[in-house]
Image (cartoon, rainbow, N blue to C red; front, side, top):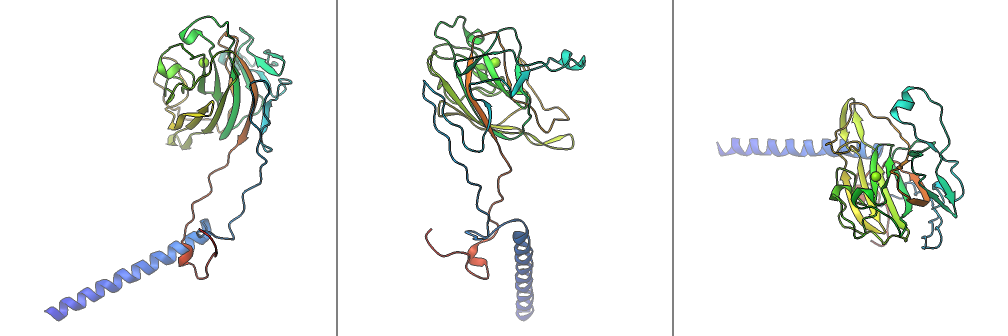
Length: 294
Ligand code: MG
């Protein structure tokens, strides 16, 4: 009986070993298709980008070498007037952006409507700077309101929130109507402020959202949104949800909320997918992948 039991046990052991070998072989084959070994010298080197320079209060910095410059202080050639739904449906022709350009900045021309980029984008790193006048009037949402819309529909709020309260998910650094900022890192009016944003578009599987849109935001160098999952396109006073269909790309829009907000130094970089993780240990490879320091 004991002998029979031993036989069954060794058979089971063999089975486990065979299964492990098969799965290792499959994994190894897959890793050579899709991934690399840890420290794999065959892994392609990233593209070289010359970093930009930081802005000062007096002057805009330089964008990185691979940036798409949307506004460099000179003109609005990369922008046009945004059409309302009604204008879009009526087939009205495109019109130039009617905001004001002066002394290296762009200013909201109250009543002229939102402006949008001519080009459309998907996943981006965006840098923009904004400014509120010291003699700004109003309070809450009526104080220095504008906004930056990603894919024309996800609003990162621009507001003068220095010593000025409003609902938390509508202050500067908020994803409007969805997420308050982690902290209020706003500067005083009369000072240029910076936004650095990583936006990832939603991914759909048919009519289902496989992965929601995501945002990371630094306001004046301080993290205020940390890779949050967006609930859907921005809506006012309504809990949003994703539509069944979603465009692949969309413009960057700037909001005319009737307030004298200025912008400068607006650029973005289009982001590709993250590279896949290393799929196999160098120790498991037939030949050592690399030698050297950890
Ligand atoms: Mg706004």
